[in-house]
Image (cartoon, rainbow, N blue to C red; front, top):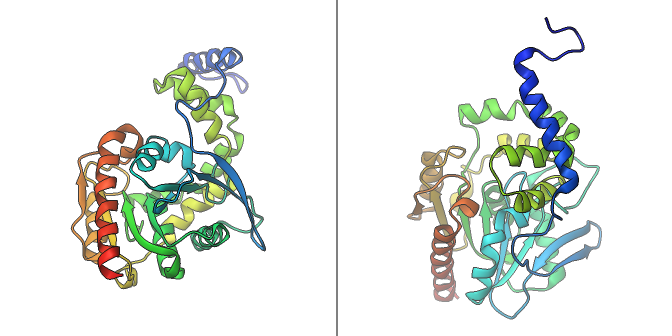
Length: 307
């Protein structure tokens, strides 16, 4: 019989396997990204703080990539950086508050602050209006950026995202954010690594992924989930003035495709449909990038026609 200090018999094999995986952390390869990344630097914005930015440089049309929840820019956009740069774009990607190398603030996480941060960084860079690409949670941030700072956005693409995140299943999930905060706060980097190993990820790549995941703030990530549960642009998204496009992930198990379709309807566009799940940007990167490039090409054409 399991005593107060002993795990139940059924739990012992799993705990033993986890212990073995944690012991292996001492022999893992260094957390090196699996492919080259654009140069990274810190941008100081007076009155707001320091922001980590990937910037490919060059004089091409600037594209701002806005990542999703929990996964910072490099994890969200790693397969996207080079194809966009090779297509002639200047690629910009910043880590949002509490994510990756993003700003740590004593204030509660708010999507509006993320949008204002992005606008402030763009102003500090003194770049022309950008084509903004928002993925998942990056979709609400991009919508807010286009609404609150229209002079900074020449057009936008919304991928695997929605007008609101109030689906009944999602509401249940957002209520678990307190528990998520506790778990993330307790999880050391080694447990992220063990989880990725159990999921079958290659050790060299998973060590880097675990390292990147461990950079996030447990408090901010949990509050970001709550913020998504409160977001609703259904009353104003259709009033945005910039050229726009929607990439709909038709097999999405996180953001229901019908909600993505409702977003496209509200914006008055026919979506680019990709037969993939929510992780298309990484798990089906080649097809995702091809669709994104088509969407960006359409925005550039629309922007030239409206100029």
